[in-house]
Structure formats: C-alpha cells, structure tokens
Image 1 (cartoon, rainbow, N blue to C red):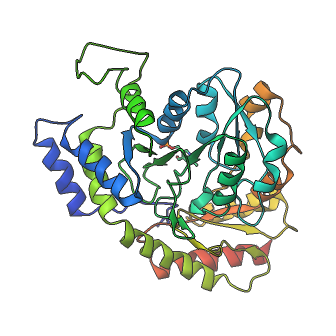
Image 2: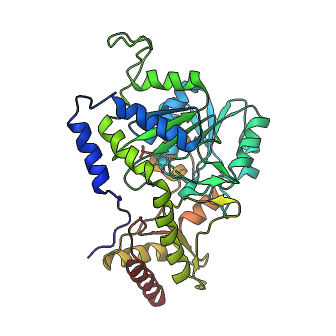
Image 3: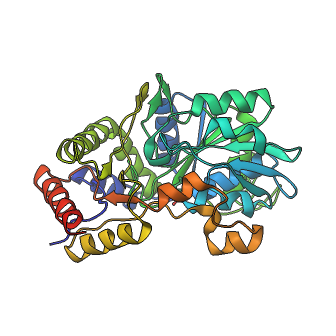
Length: 372
Ligand SMILES: Cc1ncc(COP(=O)(O)O)c(C=O)c1O
C-alpha cells in the first residue's frame, strides 16, 4: 500500500454540488462563478475576486493588467514553483531573482533593494509552503520604491501574518486550486485586488477581451480563454466553506510530524514562525547541513522503494535548463536557495493522513537515515 504525497478531501457534498451544476443549463459563466468569486472575496476580506482556470494564468493576467511587459523587470524568489517566474516571462518581462532567508524560505527582504533597477516594475513575493513570514517587510520596500506587489499566494490560502490575511498584501494577489492545494477546484485560480479597474481588466482578459456591454462577438482587446467553469466553481464553493476544518486537520498532521520527529539532530523541521497563523500546504523538512544532495536523493529513493511518496521541493528556478539558457544563471548565483534545495524532503501531507500513517512515514525515514 502506498502512502501518497497529497490527496484531495472530497465528500458527498462536493459531488452533489458538481452534479447539480451538471443538471443545470449553466456550465460556464453561470451563477456558481459569481457565487464562488463573492464567497472568496468575503473570506479574504477584499473588494474583488476574479476566478481563472489556473494560478499560472492568474499571475499572467496580473502582469498584463499592471502593464508589465518587454523591458520590465519583476523581482521574485528562485525558491518556488516554476509558475511564479514563468508568467513574468510570458508577459515579455524579466524575472530578477533575490535569494531567500534560510529561516523562512521566503524572499529575503534584506536582499531586495540591491536588485532594484530603473526597469523594476514590481515585486512578486511567494508565501512558500504557506508561510507568510516577511510579507510586511516586502510591502514596505515596495512602497518606498513605488513598486507594485503581486502576491503569489498560491500555496497559502488561509494563512495570516499578524492578523492580516494572505491575499491582502499585494496590489494584486493570486491563489491556485490544483488538487494538492488547501482547497481544490480540480484546476483553477483566483485573482484578488481592491482595485476595480484592475479587476475589470482581468475579467475582460480571461474572456477573450470581451467588453462590459456583454456582447459575445465584440472584442475590445487581445484576450484569452482563462475562464473557470461553473462545475469547477461549485466544487470550490464547498471546499472554501470547509477551509477552517481543512486548516485544523492539516495543522494536526503537521503537529504529529513535529512530535514524532522532534529531537533528531539530522533533521531541520518546519515550524510556524512568530506572528504567523499558518495554513499548512506541505510538510517540507531539511536534512542537516552535513548531508549532501546525493545522500538526500538516496533517502528519497529509499522512501519511494518503501511505498512512501516524497518530493524534493524545489529545484531552484534559476537552474532550470531554459532559465540557464535564456538568462545565463549558474550554480552559485543564489547560494542559500541552492543549499536549502539540496536537502529538502517533502513528506506525505494531506487532510486525512492518519496518525498511524504519519508514524509509518517517520519510522521509515529514521530507519533509512540510520542506515545512511
Ligand atoms: C508558488 C506557486 N505559484 C504558482 C502556482 C501555479 O498554479 P497552477 O498550478 O494553478 O497554475 C503554484 C502551484 O501550482 C505554486 O505553488
């Protein structure tokens, strides 16, 4: 039997909500889209929410809505999923990486200012693994230099820093609903902003550049089909209504791991930083600095051979082959990111992972490390 890396938490309520849409005449651009957007905006406490078909398309539309394009630069972190940086490139702009703080694994606010040039238009911070630490400092720097903050909140639905919810730090923010996320719509994403003009632009861009007059065959600008169907939205509405329950379940799993793996000096465990209400996305620990990348990879391999799914979140974005080719990045450019990423292990993590399964994962990991 496998213990999976992630699993969605779908009940009869979600299934019934999806079936109800399938029995209705409105499979897209119907009432569930409006309901999901309103429920999401209410939950975060922001004026506008615009649903799209993925987090990636959401981030891309933020670039377009803010007028970011050729010749512009956007500062972001190299320790993230590839789709924090690729929307910048899709818009024709350049992602400029700044190394991370080893304590939070988020962009290091102290290193941002030297990366700002005359071409910098925005900072795109990421709450990596759900951790909102440092977002306040990023916003201060952006304000000082008159830069927009585009918050990649894809991994952090439900997190808050000093009582301020993730998704409210950026001028525009984006969440993602891939099945490993805190809530899922199958595929999907949500753009948030307090600015009506930016939201209206995203509404048009996601729907073939159509204007507000509602005419189906009138296109005011180059647009895309990034719509999220009512089937997906119905799933999202039920999932969002369970978010506090999801947060509690995930926090419990994280606590089991923390307790079962405590006091092992071969491991650096993730923890909720001070002032943070963390909505756990994944449980990513690090092997101690004495371990090499090769040893970490052999631990991953051994875990998999014992039927436990694990992952090496993340390979640094600047070292992806096409990034090296296009921008000439090389090993050594962002040493903290590189050192961290060589030693990470993402353990199985999802709402309904049981205490017994967690114990099997921990016991297996320790046995493998003992033999190493
Ligand atoms: C940090 C981050 N940014 C962007 C994305 C892209 O979201 P999607 O997969 O919905 O396009 C993801 C998740 O997949 C992510 O983890």
